Image (tube, rainbow, N blue to C red; front, side):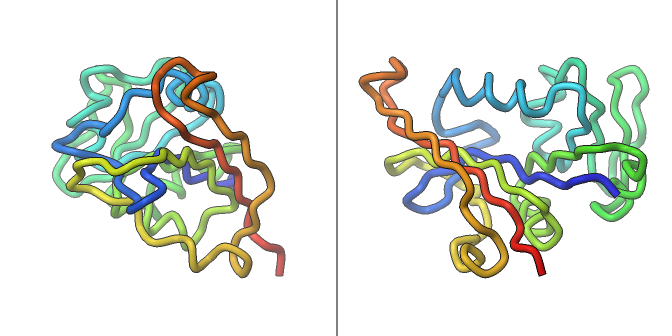
Length: 172
């Protein structure tokens, strides 16, 4: 089985990840990081994430699997469809890395199986209707923090303070 990585950007205050189908912020450096990490790998997303965001701007140079019980496969869009996260992962048995990139339901399922978390924690409060699942209680027992890369508003030019955090599953 491949290494499973949950990748997300969320508000550090309340875990907000979306507002009316969009990210509550614009962080070009985070988008570049997402591209760099996922390039030439498989990205698994839920139907809403696909329809609200990626269908309009499909990810180039990545294999896409959309988890949905209502969509059918669409080879013209370059996506594969799976009926569950388990079925999506089964399709990835021969791959090295697989990224789970939203939405909230897939993130919740992904936390139970992920080998690694790649999180962008954004400072501040944002209007949101979608939230990343609680994960802080898993830190220190299920996952350990292995890297933090702070970004200050004055340095990054986008007016936001955020940090990239990498967590790895604690070995048994």
